[in-house]
Image (cartoon, rainbow, N blue to C red; front, side, top):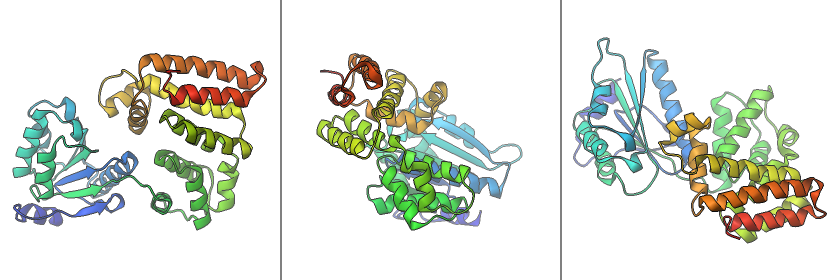
Length: 342
């Protein structure tokens, strides 16, 4: 590709590389995908892969985990093949990279391979700073895709609009607002809701359709309660619970939302391996593994065990074993917000 050749030939010394939004990704010899928002990173890397495949269906795709890397693997994958097929090399976990990977990657920047796109996924932190500084200074002729956390509703609406637009579907502003209102706490769940609507409903997406699918879904509110409690925000979780109950939520699916979150955390707790490898072995998506690991901050195995016992008792309570299901829910939130230490 001409653009890639020009980028490779450009002076490396003081050039600042382009910093692009996730949905503006384009090919380059090196593509640094940086920032904590995994959903945006997955979208950007997927869009890049799809674009490269439209250019050449013979594209070879390889994956490396930077923390489990062994010296020489990158250069082996990037070496020219007999038939000269284009290559896409995706490297995950650069924020946890081994010394061997950092050494090889810095060497690779000095002479990138022809017809090869190297994607480096770095979530956050100082590990690999020398490599990131070199890329951002222009070494390797790369670009950076910025995947910062989306905090404003307007940003999340833009994300949802892109989900529909990329699939060639039309969505009304009211539908976008309703979706973001229902799934504002989790970008992955927002994305899943958009895709579910597109899979199930033909034609344009409007507010009435969103209300039909998600307006009565207690789980959207239930996950807000669960997320606050798991993060240790006891008061916020109780307020969210009261709001959910006042909106007509039933306690049973609220407990189910808690159970789903805690079960995922229990599966991931103590498991070893990179996100992609672990997700495959557990039958989960990589973002689910990463989210569970973030949720596990401050938890230990004993706290998880006590919480699972409390969940079982609360499930029975809200199904008739106790007189006051709301009190049982409030008691469960206390256990979870204390990370099972009460």
